[in-house]
Structures are given as structure tokens and as C-alpha cells.
Image (cartoon, rainbow, N blue to C red; front, side, top):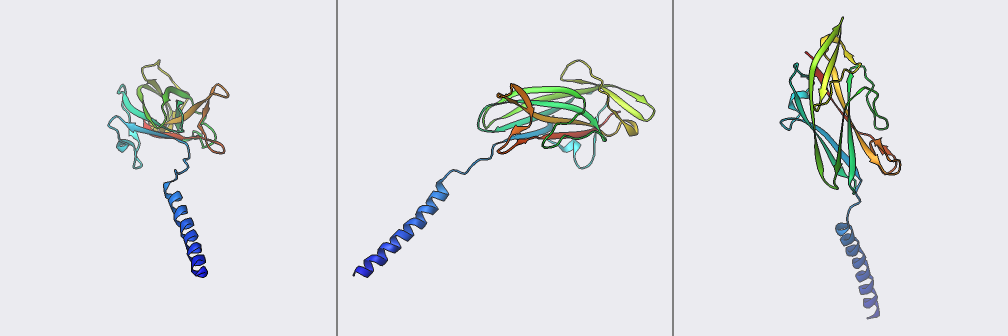
Length: 199
């Protein structure tokens, strides 16, 4: 009789541990990896006009409307800045640890609530081009601002320009914007690019 009680007690404790552990595993919240999402969309909400290996051809004086989306999964309100730069095929691209060095053509800023996605309108126009030999430079207007003529040219008659978008976050500790966001062990930079051809 004592042996049956001991066997019952051992089985009872074993099954309790197994079922208790399984219950804890299935009901406990998963650890979240904080991150910021970043995307660029055309006016129609797609990328269809500038993917599949083809660049977007932008005519003179036609405003191009893009939507930049920033999603906050950091667990607190974030102050985001998007830095837009103009580059070409030889421009050094940003990386996960450092921003690019191409000329800045526009800056957008927005507070992004926890778990929310904010849209930032990026409207730009090629006002004119300047051709010197086989090199072409552009004069742009971004979001209705003053015209800018970045010191960037493209070869092959206006082909292979690109707009680079970098995501920067405001850091309270330094009271400045920093490229990327603070990850679990280091800063994580993120950037996007869209290639285009000038007329």
C-alpha cells in the first residue's frame, strides 16, 4: 500500500511539473525585440513603378508624390527624422552603423506613438537639369521649399540618380538626433533608396 502511494505521489508530481511547465510556456508573454519600421510608397500606395530593375523616369515640372511610413515598435513615443539625400551610382551608401555623406535635399520630422505608423509626405519636382558634357545635374524642389541644386551629377544623360532616405531618432541623453535607433546591444541604422532618371 505504501509503495502504491509513493508511485502515485511520484507520478502526480511529475505530471504536475510537465503540465505546469507547458502551461507557463504557452501563457507567458514573448519577449519583444524593439524596432522601427521604415518604408517608401508611391502616391498609389505601391512600389510598382520603381521596382523590378527599372528606374523611375521623372519629367520636368511634374511633382512626384511619395509617402514615407515610419512604424514605432520601441515601447515608447519616438521623435523620428527622415533625412533625404541625393546621390548617384558612385555615391557611398549608408550602412547599418553609419549614415551616408551625399548632399541633403530634405528633412521630415514626426512624433510616432507607440505601436503606431505615421505617414510623411515627400513631394518633389525636377525644376531643371544642367548638362556639361556627359554629366547631368538637377535642380530640385522638395515639399514646396526653396530650390536646391546639389553638387551631384549622373552620367549617361541623366540616368542613375537616386534618392536615399535615412531614419534618424531623437536621443534625450544627447539632446540630438542620431542615425538609426538604439537596439539591444548597439545602434541600428536603416535606410531606403529609389533610383530615378532625369529628362
